Image (cartoon, rainbow, N blue to C red; front, top):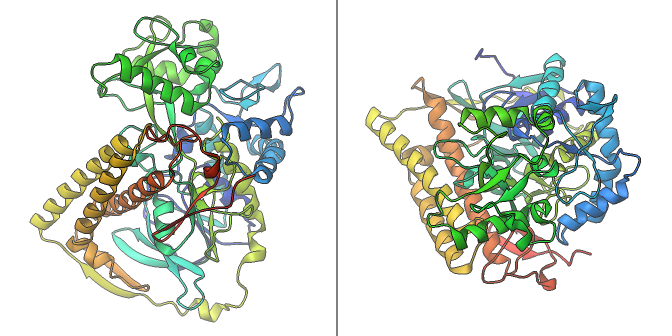
Length: 562
């Protein structure tokens, strides 16, 4: 990767280069100098992995009103109707924008092709075969790289927010880049870091999805919302040695059957819509069925049978699924696919308004890392990419919110202090092994105690364990050094391979905080709703038709959601 020099000052810094970050960068006025930060490369994000598509009511027999009602029904009483209406009404415009940028959605007789997904009442999901996310990301990336005002900073790691000591206004971030930690000033910070699926042992998310934005914002004092609501995708490829590759919901929408070892479509035992019920229902159906029938839950799975779909239709709609399954020795034309649920999408996040503003002035959040009010307790399929586009477009208004009091002379006064840090070889190796093992233990603990089904005793035990691990983590020599850094203190690291080590340290810190937040929020909500299911409180409670709000270590309820 070519290394580039980056300035100490931007007008806007965007952290994350998935659909939300890329589209936000494109929607910002070209008069602004924008820095776009990504941990790996601009082509690796959860958006890039999105298969199913992007929802919009553009068919003659459809309407934004129907899209709104489907979204609210899926959201289990916790959607903000006004925000959902905003999303659905702006969806067609967002689709047209993507088409204008060059996104090649599938077409039928020269019209945009639409498919049906679970819990949608109409065919309204646009797609590009079964790699819609990749098509969107590839197109947006190409557009971003053409923009002279956008500087892409790859293989860089945002560590913390930099707030003004008097006003509390976000004024920059600390960034690890090219073996150095440095502080970058900016008039506005946009967090677009995606979800936190890696906090679970089983997830469809890429390894970059470690909840960085939520953790960074929480430590800076941002208000968070509904962190207990995690969507578990019911059909992830489950085979020894294979990644938990997502088998798109669109496969069931096109006619695939979910069957058990006897070939029976068991999902109808749990919901009249069978395999086309909302995701949380289908995930719990699989979980419950395996609890009753499987001998080894660690390797247990059911089967997704694509053979009811005509072969030509499979080849046209799902070439990537065919390819991945073939790689793992599965011929989808002749045999069913072994599948089981995995953590997929985080409905909760940083509390934002319609303009993506948080409670911290100058700090914004877009996409999965934000809690806009669109998804409620359970996201409707294919609304996630749409949210990135519709709310990314809102950032076009940002120029009017940037502070105007700071002149160029004040901007140039920033002079960092340089420090160095080194560990002995034995210390380095010991710490590396400790962090690798800790990261693995975190994901196992959260999967076991805050996975598809939860209960109080397991949550409380897991919270105590995480708190103990947080203390151990804070006592590390590297932690003590980094956590004591003040703004303007830059650090140079002496070993050439510190990039991998620093990323492991930062992601482990974020995963510890995300695990704590999810577990505490799950223990706080004593009911079952949407993506949050309690074995000891298995039903929705009208007194809990409220949002869970978190600031620092304080949890409280919102007013009742109407």
